[in-house]
Length: 332
Image 1 (tube, rainbow, N blue to C red):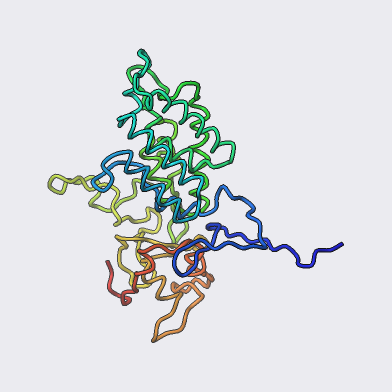
Image 2 (image 1 turned 180 degrees about the horizontal axis):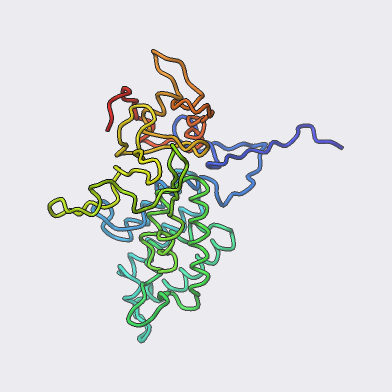
């Protein structure tokens, strides 16, 4: 027999889970979460705190804050995990797992059960597919220690936990953050990780090859203006924005609307290679009170850039939400 009501598949490429007008999670009685381990992942990434500072001077404060974040999103199991960890750290009186040591048996009962409890929590969250909680526990507790001396591999401060498994958690979580366009969170995690293999991700896949928008010739990274290589006081001028093409001798890096050198955020169309200031692109393709939205490239090449549609594909943050277009001709 067919069901009375067909099941509904609800998901979002940016994040799973909806919030009501008061910020509380909404539950759909007739829906089933396809991937519960990534529900509210971006909200956890925004709200979790991993490192001590003036607002959170101890690891206990970090755990208490993270438990409140989980409570607010109605993740009772995660909230209980963070509260239990806060109690263990407070009872053990430790700020670093390295204080427990491997040579002597800890005399504090809380310190005695801290490492086995952390080991069990990590494996339980990993079995549930929750790599975010695994990485959060590793960062808050400082489970990964940087290599010391001549060692090439980082040290894992929990016995019977391999670096390969921990590294897999980090790589999977970073991949999830990048798929959800949370590039700042991914870059911050890569930069703070004590594992050199993870930290090296910031030095990979960051090369951008350019070509001249006028003649199409690939640009040489050394093709700078006449100021290249000269000293300007204590600052040596190198790859500046005043580059010129070696073939057609035309200046590269000009805004396609105001024709000024772009020194701030630069956007370009992958189809025709033309671009300029982000504000001017939003004004041209989004329209203003004086002119309707445009679809064709403002250079007259005839390409339909659709830059506004590409920009809307990314989640809006506070910077772009409050951004206002400046008048054309006011180059930065």
